[in-house]
Amino acid sequence: TDYVFPELGKKVISFLTRNGVEVVVPREQGCCGAPVFLGAGDFDTGRIMADNTVRAFKDLEYVVVDCATCGSAIKDYAKYLADTPERLEAYEELGKKVVHITAFLTDILKLPPSAYQAVSEVKGKTVTWHDPCHLSRHMGVREQPRRILKSIPDVKFVEMAEADRCCGMAGSFSLHFYDLSVKIGDKKLQSILDTKADIVVSGCPGCEIQLMDTIARHKLPIKVMHIMELLE
Image (cartoon, rainbow, N blue to C red):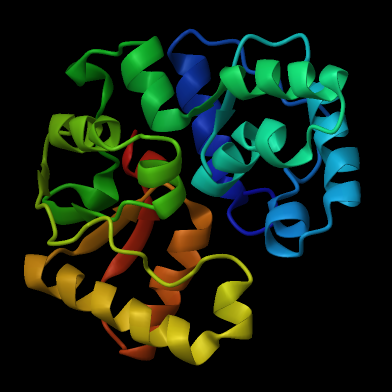
């Protein structure tokens, strides 16, 4: 979010602030460590990054993420990186605080449908939703984003077939095995095309990058957006 989609991060902060949430962005935070310990298997460096994440967010009630991979990685600190009882306790406590933005809005803030208003550029458009693997399978967040999409006036939501089929990103997999990731992406594209959607929406910047690449290769006019970018 910081380096590729900074406007998304600003949107999340703005939306939460307008809905009564005090948002803190600790300077001490860094990468969640997913590319390091999940992608490369470097658990020693992963622990350094995890410990830093614990310190950065220790005094906060929730850690809200707009990236499904980051959220699932932090929740997995205890599983993969806890080598002492102290780390296990700290990682488990942090994991309990982590929540995806869609679940935070629907399950914790419990915002009414009227809170979700469309930005002008998406009004009158048809949208479909892609389930990021880390969001649906790992974090168990499936209905929350759909609830939001169905609440937005002036936007038509159409469910795609096999919405939870992987888009082919999978972090460094798409770099090391690009040809295979392209084939996976093309299968996902067919599901998108069948909906006749103008916009494919997701909840993970990694998936967005893969979907953008897939659509650009086929020179299609379909737009890719994070769910928070739809909201005024």
